[in-house]
Length: 172
View 1 (cartoon, rainbow, N blue to C red):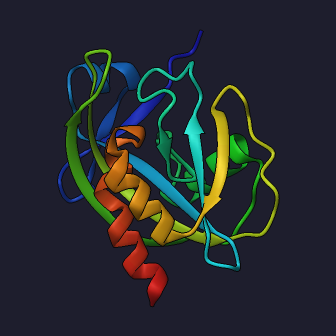
View 2: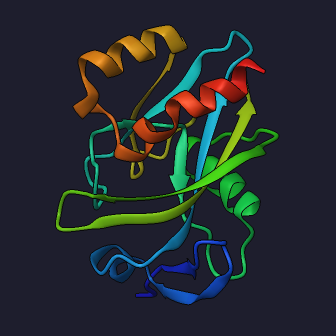
């Protein structure tokens, strides 16, 4: 079985090499990631609930999709690939910002990622990959913020770190 690789980077997003994905999460090594946010024409956010079989943060709500570019793959190509693989969607994606975060996860893993954040608009009905996604929902930002305040443990750590910043870009 081929083990998935991630792109190891420095704080300036300069590629240093590659590493097996689980090793990068067990022995926290900074690596490149992508997060995709889709909104519909009414401005509702498309969230996914991570499948229960995911290796971390399973069952938690998060942005439309997220993953890691493979060695030699651009962040935009990875974002488009994972949007199709996880949610069965296509959209014109625009990178809005990137940031670095380091947070402990369940299963003795740590996220230490330079995350490229993409935003797009789509009114397509998701065709979810049930190996990746348990459920999905559309939600207005104000309702999302209320739920986050009431139930923060229902959301992934990276989503909580960027939800307000993404909203600022969407309001422009």
